[in-house]
Structure formats: structure tokens, C-alpha cells
Image (cartoon, rainbow, N blue to C red; front, side):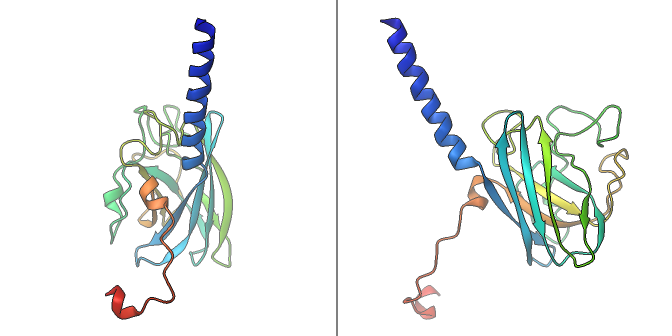
Length: 191
């Protein structure tokens, strides 16, 4: 009789985890520059032992740009300092090449092509979109920041990557699609 209760409990737990996974992955985040112009998206997908992030941007300066996950889902201008420091729940040093690194939010440099675009996929090993200390959605969430310069992979605290020029809030609230407008509604009624 206990095995039936155990089986029902397992099936119910699997259902709840499946529902949470559907809500959180994939998670598309809009990216904005310091002028509040939309410049692209970052799409996060839960995988086994990692999260992948597909970054699609346009209207950016050609070259290599540091890109990191930061600790707060706040993208307040003019410099996006509201996003806080790098996402680093393990307390490691910054940099994919640092012997005592890397932060869980460290990623390879983003290469912007001559036409100002990029479409790349990176991996974030050890993080999740589900619940937990290493979740990108823990508490209120986190953010993704693109910097003006290349991350050197070792300098502290942020790889000498320059100014924060693009930000996207990684949270369930920010990723929720906007309610479509009603074309029969007049502009006067909206104000």
C-alpha cells in the first residue's frame, strides 16, 4: 500500500516540476541600451546541469564585448549600476581564465559583426532557471549585461570590460509578454 502512495507522490511532484519548467524555460529577455532602445533579446533555456543563452543583438559597435550575468534584475540608466555585481553565489574570482574563477555569471566575449549584429549561443554551467541558490531567478531574478569592451578573462572584479552598455532583466515579471493592445480602443481612453 505504501508503494502506491509513493508512486502517486512521485507523479504529482513530476507534474509540478514539469509545470515550473514550462513557465521558466525558455525564458526570453529583452535587451536595452542606455538610451532605452531595444537592441535584441537573450533567450535562456534550462538544460541538464546548465542553462544555455541565445543572444541576438543589432545596432551595436563591432568588436568583442564582455557579457555577464549580474545579481539584480534592475536596468536603471544611465549606467546600469543598479544591476549590482556579477552573479557569484560560489564566491569565486572573476574570469573564465582565472585559476580561482569563474563566477557562475561569466561568459565568453560576445563578437559583434561589422553590420552591428550578433547571434550566438553560450552556456552557463552550474546555473538553473528552477529554484535554488544557483538559480538565475532566485529572489527577484538577475540581469544580463553587455559591456563596451572585451573581458580579459582574469582582471578583478569584471575583466576590465568597460562601461555597461546593454542590460536585460532576467525575471519572470520582465519576461512575461505584454498584453496586446485593443485596436478598437481610442488613444483618449488609454490616457
